[in-house]
Image (tube, rainbow, N blue to C red):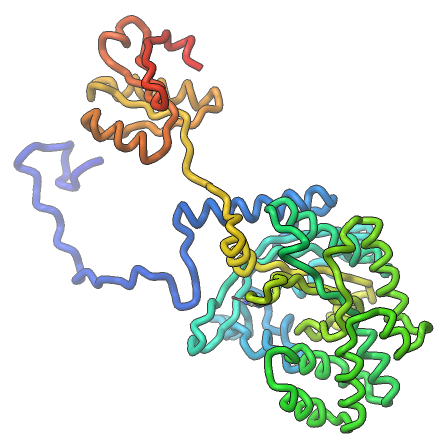
Length: 446
Ligand SMILES: Nc1ccc(Br)nc1
């Protein structure tokens, strides 16, 4: 490139480099609080994880979708007192619009389904892998972003949809070496809660709030739970009965309490029966205390947990039949799950299942003389056009440096472009694992 002195490249007389306009400020090279960089090694693990997310989604016939990470704040304003609302990463943009970095993907999916309307035949089986955000006071030093894999089925009211979704997660776990001894799913239905609240003639509009309180059952003291339930208008008796029902861990017991006529028991029975057919019965258990922390769930809910109880929920999901209609769309049945990229990596570390993912390159190509850099570029291109990976040495470096780099990038072979060989239309090849070396005609290089 020109050196900016108004002429071609000049020698020793070239003008001194221009003085920088302002003093260089040393910037903070760390990413913003609560966020992560993905340098090569971490990026290989992330790509491996996402590749497995996508492969399972493909196996189940789902189509990939995506949405903006920035959404209208209105998409996430729900009044049930969810943590996701309290920690919304929201702000006013330069057009004075209230916007938010999405805390989850489901509302965006619902928005797109409504936007597409009748133009997309049901059922829809869509999946997405997207970064989600929260703004939490850094007191707890927790992350502010994570990537979530979501799979959603829109337009299927039957429990077959939830059974299919759980099957897809079991398939994912099996692919990465996680077994039913490592992980299980707690499964319940919010209809259990609904039926108890109805017995105590507690109004429907308390449902979401009660769910959000119950979801904290293992996170805050039980007296606090009772206090919050009473604060939304539940009687002492209703609270005691509700907590009693939520402690049930067997479907038979649940049926004794609720009777066999309700939808909750029927749905759960069907789900457990389908689990037999899918072959994942050993992975799931009924646990009435599972409600999940999102207000919009209306039916079956489930969450993946590590059986050693060391980690937070690995994934979670459920049926949300009312969400689309709350956005002004048709009353479409829907269910889905979210699977974060953080807890699963902690689990894989715990289990010694992190994959070995080193950089691999088939060839490192090097010109033995600066005049042969063009020839080396030709050789690299020929190999790349054959689909071979090539690290082309771009500078005039000593062979010692080239061998060191070859080791660092795990190159399988070294292609040396030297004058003597090039004159004969040949290059030198060195197999780095065995040390074997030979010359080969360029058009026979493969
Ligand atoms: N919803 C949400 C977003 C970001 C993180 Br980190 N955790 C939860």
